[in-house]
Amino acid sequence: MRLRSSLFLLAAAAAVPVLVLALFALAHVVRTENQAIVEAAKVRNRATLEAIDAELRDSISTLRALAMSRTLDRGDWQGFHGEARTVLGTQPTWRNLVLQDTRGRQLANARLPWGTRLPQVPIETRTLQAAIEGRPTVSDVTFSAELGNEAGIKVRMPVVRDGHVRQVLTAVVDPAAFQRTIERQHLPGDWVSGLSGTDGRLIARVPAVPPGQLASEQFRSETARAEEGWYRGHTLEGRDTYTAFNRSKLTGWTIGFAMPAHLIVGGGQRAAALLATGLLLSLLAAAALVTWLSRRIADPIAVLAQRASDLRAGEVPAMPASAIEELQVLQHALGETAVAIRQRDAELVRRGEELEQQAQALREVDAHKTRFLAQVSHELRTPLATVRNGMALWQSTVDPQRQAHARALVDRQLALLTRMVDDLVDIGRVGRGELQLRTAPVALDGLVQDCADALVPLMQQKAQQLVVRHAPMPVIVHADADRLCQVLVNLLTNASRYTGRGGHIEVRVAEEEGEAVLEVSDDGVGFTQAEGVRMFEMFVRLGHGEADPGSLGIGLTIARTIVQLHGGRIEASSAGRGRGATFRVRLPLSAPDVEVAPKALPAPAPL
Image 1 (cartoon, rainbow, N blue to C red):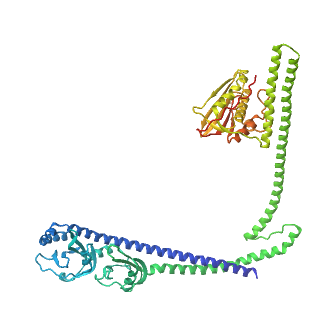
Image 2 (image 1 turned 135 degrees about the vertical axis):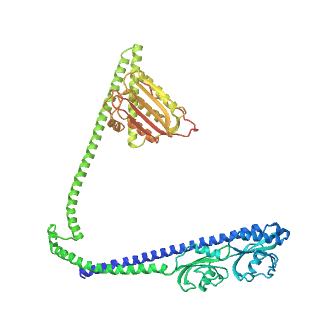
Image 3 (image 1 turned 90 degrees about the horizontal axis):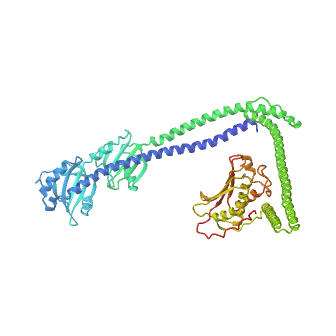
């Protein structure tokens, strides 16, 4: 199959989904518009029915008030006749007001003078019987022979005394009142609206017809099947319309609004014609475009096919000049391939540099470890030499005072060696992840006091002042008291080591934001921001401060690990060199009513 034929098939295949989608869209739009028109007609129906029902309810309310007249209690029909004429004058939509007994005989007629002989046979018995049964009713269109056969709507109200219906009040409402209600809707000239009774006879209509005329047969048939609906049919004049209708729950009357059928089907027909025209024009334009494009595409592709042999030699074939985007993309893709190869080489170089940086970091770690081992050996040799000299002194003299001095010297160095060995053991456990805790509820204030008291002699040697600030309420944490004391002793020892003679050290216990806070601050040498980032790393020791023997540079690493095992965190901050430092330990609070474990044993105090 040639390229041109393929392009024609492609255009046809692309047009089919578009056509289907357009048809679906057209159907949806037409259906949506029709539903909107129908709903608008139904809303207008309901509003008109509500206005008609409101007029009838007003008449029922007036009759209910008149039924309470004292003249009815006394049987004074002449007196009631006067009251009825007065009420009739206040009701512009009423044609008459009649009082009847339960057999339908008229007792008073407001339209006729008193004394006129009145009809003894009721004109309409269905609603009269309903009123005698004790409920207000509304009739369909009726005609009064004694009043010129004029049309009226009878609204009946029972007169009840002692639980029994004694008489029936009937207000005859002029159908013209409902005609005016419909006319106030201001319907377009080609619309039809009609109000029919339960018997299918028209009460009011636009265009107007005499009251009592039968509605169209289709209208009566459709409204008999449902209280609300929508159908297509013909009016009395033979117009093709769509009619929406609603039935009143108060009277059983039905109102319908009929709109010309072309409003419903005309939009869809016009849209379909427009769609067909647009589709035909689109197909013609597509055929012309396919013919033109096939020539522009086929020639460059033929040139590329001839030059494809250049790829065998590993060369990029010379691209023919073309305005076709795909051919331009192909040329661009070949160029991007070369760029991608160069980028891959650059990525390999970058990864090599990263590997070199990682190797350099490992070398630095190894260097730290080597310096650490050298430092450990140096720090261990110094107290061992002192122990050896103290033992020699103790053995070479019999003076009790000199022997006591030698023994104290040996005790101090042994305590120093013990602490250093304990740190080395702990750092080994940290590296293997074997550091264990024995936790219990611990009161921080008592723990801090005991641990701080043990370091008072060390600080007194440098004339340093230690202040402990307790929390106003007990602060309880779930912790290993010995390990927590180890953290505090490490922080206090560092504070004393890097604080000059006569300096100040403060320990504060507090509860902040639902956490227990243990804070150690001093006014010593402080540290820079870069040093603060590195000070908790293993095998790292800051290079300033007093050269205090016994410092291996691993205490902060152990302290951080212990705090993290407790679910807390440790932070260090300083304003800079010479401006002091603050170490803050945050731990989760324990329940306030738990039993507190015994206080931790104080750390060995330097003698």
